[in-house]
Structure formats: structure tokens, C-alpha cells
Figure 1 (cartoon, rainbow, N blue to C red):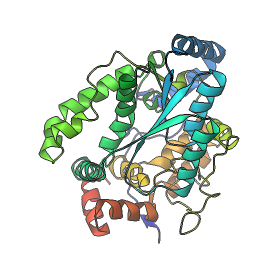
Figure 2: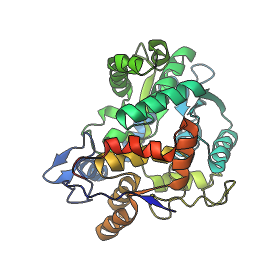
Figure 3: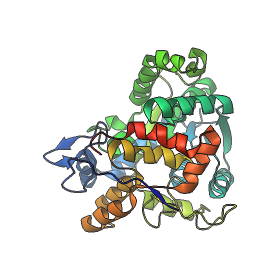
Length: 365
């Protein structure tokens, strides 16, 4: 049975893609959202020059130790694009690192991560947040902020940064600068991510009293809190290659990536609800992660379908009419298997989940 909770929100929408102004930090100029403004700049970028710029950065670090860069990976299609560019095109020797969670991981996700490591002949570290800390931090964030994976999503950025420091690796490579791609920034700052880590560390430090009040100790929070920010140099690949899920998928598929349609779960093929129709390759690694994404619908009136549909529209793959229709028909669904795994892992009944989640529903809904 599909779970859906459809609300009506009074929002301003981008006159080009229809994205709502409820996204925190989203820039609007003359009725156009920052994501569309930034995307339009792509046509004026000399991408050959950007790749030359990436090459010069790699020249600075290549051969400096057993690993000359570190790449955070999940095993998704973006991970394949990152590793492919750095290993095959830039002739770098990366160390791969994954920050893992306690939710159930899909068979496709497990296959894709193993295949990525094998296909590109890379060494790989897995950083697993202790199950107890994961449960306490995720429950606290869900109940207190409506953002269940706040702690984990910080760790996804800060742990690779801190690991690179410990191992003396000078270059850290992430995929997209989401603030730029989704329109909450107007400058890409030459692809530098160090300022984002510094900002993130400031937020973590400022919230130490709150986390301590909900049972996450200063010592536990300090495990994901960098103390210095001068090294490594952190860059976003989206500055040097025009970032596209469709393009990244093609690279991944050519190198052994499988979709949810191709690898069955114990119950069969996972035909997800509340996703862009036909999407069997975006965010497929962790089953309950979709609940974290869906909470945006309660809080802001949109979720993952809006993110993907508006991207496809900017890329010219669908029309505005198709985009609006796909969002209206799919954005409000919450996947039943994702909800079940979320509740099972964190120890909630579904009634308890809804009692907590509905506290964060926008007032005008």
C-alpha cells in the first residue's frame, strides 16, 4: 500500500523550472531560481580550460606518497565518474573511503561498491559509525530537527577530510558542489570546498550544547569535528566537468554499475515510490535514506522528485509541462520499504514515526 500525505503549500516558484522558494538558502532573482541561473552559466564556461585547471592541481599532488588523492565514495554512479576521471584521465592513485550507516544496504549498492573498488584497482577504507552512536544521533536529530541524518551527513564530509590529514594526503575530491548546483550560492569559489568544511565545523561546534543535551557527548561529536582546515585541498569535480546524473550513469554503466532493476533484493525488484518515474539508479545504496529525503516534503513542500525533475528540465530532457506533471503525481509519496527499514533500524513503530514527523509539517499545509 502506498503511503502519501499530500499537502497544499503557498510558495513562489521559479518561472523557468518551477522549483519552490521554500528550499533553505535558495537564491531568487527576478523570479528565477539560483539553480537555473547557475546552470545557464555553463554555456559560457570553457570546459577545456577547466580540465586543464584540474590537471594542474593534480600535477601538484601526483606521486606525493602512496596515495596522491582521497575520494569519498558510496558506490553510486557519481562515485564511478569521480574515480574514472581521477584514475583514468588524471593518472592519479586515489584512496577510496566510505562513511557507512546502520540502515539496510541494497544488494545493488553492495555490488556497485565492490565492483568500483575492483574495476579501478583501488584500495578502500570503510568508516563505520558505531551502531549505538548512529541510533542515538539519528533519533535525536529526527526528533529534534526533522533532519534524521544530520550527524551522518556531516560525517560524510568531515571524516574524509580528517582522514586525509592523518594520512598526509594533500588532495580531497568530492563530486558536486550542491550549494552551487541547487542554487544557494552564486560563486563556485574555484571549486574549493575548504570553506564549506570550515562552515560545517562552525555549525557542529555551535550545536555542541544541544547535542550534549540530547545525549551525544562532546567526545562523540568531536569525532567528526576537524580542528584545522589548511589541508587537504578539497575540490568539487562539478567545477571541472559539467555535472549530470545521466552522464555519470553512462560512465558507471560502462564500468559494471547495476541499477535496482538489475539486482533483486530478498523481496524481489525494489520498485520505489516517491521517486522520479523510471529512476532506478539515484540514491540506491541505503534503503531507509529515502525517509531523510522525504522529510523535506513535510518541511518545505518538495522532495527528491522535484530535485530530479527540475534538473532533467534544465538539461533539456523533459518539458516544463512534463516536469510539473511528474512532480504533482509523485513528489508526495513516501516509500513503504524505506519507512519500514527506518522504523526497524531506529526502534520506532510507524505510529511513533508519524507523531514525530508531523511536528515538522509546515503550518500552511
